[in-house]
Image (tube, rainbow over all chains, first blue to last red; front, side, top):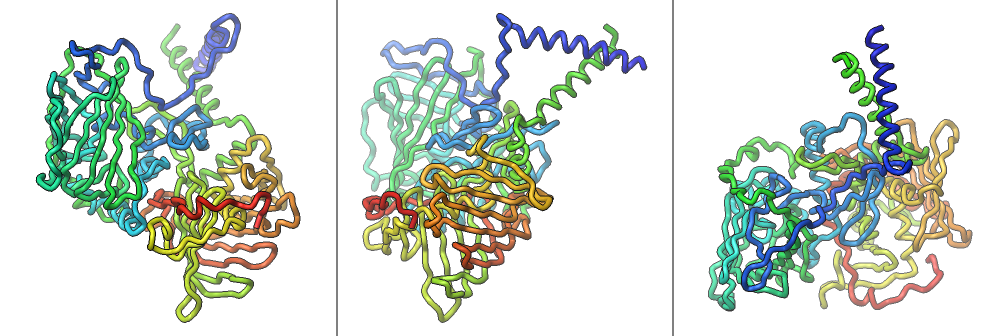
Length: 320
Length: 282
């Protein structure tokens, strides 16, 4: 009885509170909160260096996500959630159906239960339509690599993710004649080792491709295109895929053009991949947005030591 | 306020929030959520626990279904392997029919939005000298319609139709009816759901009765996750299709790749240059 009475009292209180909230402004109903995964709108000024360029220096992990360069995996997969009943494919604008979450589903897909969550995440990572178009003779190979990613993904066994798969660096140091990018080692989707790049911005030209030994990171050169930093790289080995998932292999003739654009506290990154040996046409990634760590004294944490634990236990082809 | 009252307040608030969260605003959405859930077509869209909770989204972008059985070509039954690779963004489908040994050569019929063509091999015509792509524009609507009579297409199109989708009951089963739009405007789709909310029968009816290439009937049964890589996406194990009342397809599904596999449908230059005859459905 006491509980029932309390509930009744509480219900009245809730009713009163709800009425207050609903009629909070000029008697008009309060807008319903719309769940969305849209990138945050930039805030604050865009600082500039003495030479007038935007200053990209900083720790770019402000959204706190644990995956390198993947602050918003569903958006990075090419789907933007508009509200509870609507989403759309970023590349084409095509509407995608959505429904409000069911009761009790507080956490993300991985928390549903082990297998169900992983399977859902696997599908979500392949939901967007922005896919590189390979030459037809390679279509089956791309599918084979993706289907067998547990064995075939070159970033397994703690190998470097490489460029451009690494995405947005978590730390950028901008000097007048060079940039330093740091990609700490991560667990999760791409369990990989720490990588760094020292990128000249002194007007030099690329070494002729035939004189380069292919590497995971290639030979990068930076230049400014207005307020956008362009990092042009070639000279890669063939031991990497060029996107997070999908089996997107490349040849040693891959050429990447990364574009970094700072606006306030956000950094937008895209990459165009040219590889006439295997691609029918150049491919440009869906833009990704990183947020500056709001702590001006923020430091990078020590990268996780990479230790491959899962592969030995894989008994099916289910994967990320 | 006492601790019990505070706890009760929280309890009542939680119940109120939960009740609100489970109520879709229209009967159409309630039925379509049930159908999409049965198919495993909608999933929560936030990955991991670090992000704020997001709604469920339709996760079917690309899929490939392979089956063995009888395929009817010009009315003649042929034992064959049937493979349908399809995508909803962009709307596209590539159907390969490989007859059994000693019979005719395989055929590949492809459609992407308003363009249709036949391929001598997948991706023919994209690189000069590698296969032949023959425009077949008059078949575009009929091929495109096959995309929307698949269970996943029914759910997508019915949701897209919004308030124009109607719900009724016939012989104890739930029946959805809705109009298609875009290139297929004028075609009405009727779909029947079983007690588990699986789509078991689909019938299409064009506004123009003479457009018999848009009169499909499809029956689906034996739903399960048929994928080698499990996805929890359910697909029919048996597919029967009729076109204009005549048998078209009767196959037992042997393989499904529902993991949004790499399936692409670039337009060959000569197909892109061809123009669909306006107003034709054939």
